[in-house]
Every structure is written in C-alpha cells, then in structure tokens.
Length: 431
Image (cartoon, rainbow, N blue to C red; front, side, top):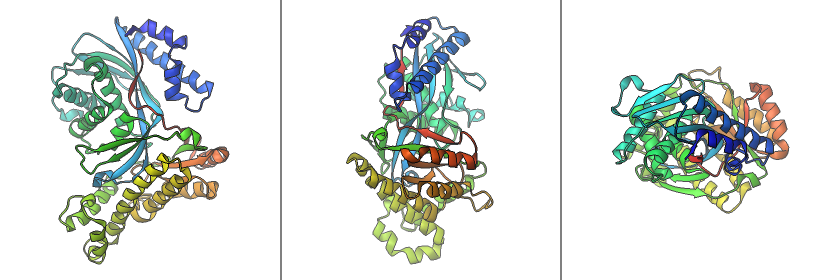
C-alpha cells in the first residue's frame, strides 16, 4: 500500500482515473469523473487530517443497491433481481497497529471498537458500532487474525431511499477487513453473508440476504433463496448504459416511520397461507395446491392474504423472466415485466400506502404522475419495502428531463435521482 500522501498525489495526477470512472462516471461525462476524483481526494485528506497514519492506506467502496425485480419475495425464499448502483460509501483506511477500529463517518460521531471483546452488546443494537463489531466477530470466527485500522467514510447513499445504506456499510467494512486481515481471500458472497450476520445478530434486524448480495457482488444479480443458507447467485450480464433508458429513484419525502406493522403483516399473512399447507414459506407450496385451496384460504385468512400470496407467485416467476430478457438483450420485454411487477405490488401486494394513515399516499401519487409523464413508455414501480419512501422508473432518455422536472415539481428539488447500475460491487478502489 502507498502512504496517504503518495495515494493523494496519485489521485490528483489522474493515476486512478480508470478505476474511478468504472464506478462513478458511468454516464461517460468528464464532470462525473472530476467529481469522483475530488471526492476521493477529500476522503484521503480527511484520513490524513484526522488520524495522521504513518503507514500505507487504501480506498474502499461499498455501493448501495436497487431492487430490480422480486418485491417482497426473498422472505418467502423466492427469487430476486437486484443491482449495485453508483451511489456508495467511500472510505480511506489504514492499519493502525493496535487492537482498535476507529471510524469517522462524515456527519456522525466518531466510532471506536476494541477487538478484544466482540460479544453482542444490547446497548449497541441499531447502531453502526453493532455492524462493525458483528463483521469483526464473524471474520474472527472464520479463522482470521484481526488487527486494528483507522478509516474515514463519506456517503452518497440516500437515507430512506431503499438503496440500503446498512448493506453498503457492511460491505465497506467487510472489504476493509478482507484486505487488511484476510489477504483478500473472502469472495463477495462470503462478505455479503458476513454483513447479514452482523445485521441479524448484532444490529438486531432479521433481514434477508438480498441487500448484502446486491451491494457486495456488483452489477445485476439474480438470487434464488430456495436454500437461504446457500443461495444461488448469478450475475446477469447486461449493459444498462446501452438501453436508451435512465434509472431513476424518486424520493417521495414520505417517512418509513411507524410502518413496522405494515411490513410485518405481509410476512405474517403469507406465512399463514404457507402454514395452511404445513409449510413455513410459500416457496415450499406448489402453485397448483395454492390455487386449488383459494376458496378455503379466503375463508380462513381473508382476501388480502390470498392476494398477497398471488403476488408472491407472480413476482417470483417474473424475476426469472426479467433475468432471461436481460440476458438475451430484450429490454422491451424487461420493461413490460417491470410494469407488471409494479401493478402486482399495487393491486395484490398492496404496499403502496398504509391503511393506518390513509392521508399519506405519496407512492400512488408518484406512480400516477410518473405514468402520465411517461405516457406508456419506459417502466415504473414501487421501490423496496413500500408503503412510503421511493419509486423506481426506467425512463427513456428523451423523456428524462420532463420526468425529472415533473417529479421534482411534485416532491421538491433534488428528489429525482438518476442512478446507474455499476458493474462492480464492494471493492478496493485504489491503494
């Protein structure tokens, strides 16, 4: 590794422009590369100013992820299609020769974790400290010798955007440990599983593995969770930059707060239908058996549970079709499937607004306004868990300015974000 000053000089001289362009200048614009270079230089300088490392340093990236297909299918051991995006958490880190992890994230209090005690701490639940401690504990459990490091972190992953800032952070920290303590022997799938372990056991959130896989593996990723402990992970090679469409995430400025019951009801209702057949998840119930039992299921669990289960079977199938369309370069078919998924989420899954707060229906409003602007072109759907938050749209380039203006007139300046599916997941950017 290069000393910080050497790394900073190399960045300023453009020596790492190729690596930066591959992550942050996917639109091919010189201005995007310039911003990426300036950002990288700033985080290196921040590490120098904050910790004054004496040894070598490296740049690391943990990208956000977008769900492309499979809305609420993963918790039923279904299939999903997701992708890493060019919004990320970027860190400059350096070994410090101690048994301390010290992290300064831009805009947050400094974090310090001692490696001598990596047990779960209740007071750290739902904090970044829990994620760092959990990643460290799992890496140690895998047989690697841990050593301390200092890191400064800056992030462009939007809070509450459905881009999964927690998975980006876990991927970032996992890659730092991998480089400094594991000789880069951990592959992206292993790093994703380490992140999930940290979030489940230490952070206290019983999440699936989709977020971490989408961040760690990179590109568009098809994941089959039929065996959650050993998911089938397949990269889907498709160059979205050649599709003639822009990927937009629209922040409707609606809060995810107080939606726990809404999210839990989806899992509970699908689980109740699966339990009717003596199974834990819908993936274990054959579609024909479910269809034959619909009259009895309506009586026992209500129509909404049946409709939500119908959504699972439809969206689980659509994920396979979406991946196949991309593999064969049939973007028009892909767009039709994305639109079908959006309609299914609205009508069957019913996760675009909360019955507990019917005055707040920002997602349906965004979808309706977006469909009007697109006028039958492109594709649009709810993004992530739903009920509030964001929508996703694939917008033809000739409609992009009109779509962005329309969405930001409705929800405010800066609320429509133009993203790119980046080909690389968590990584060492430069050293």
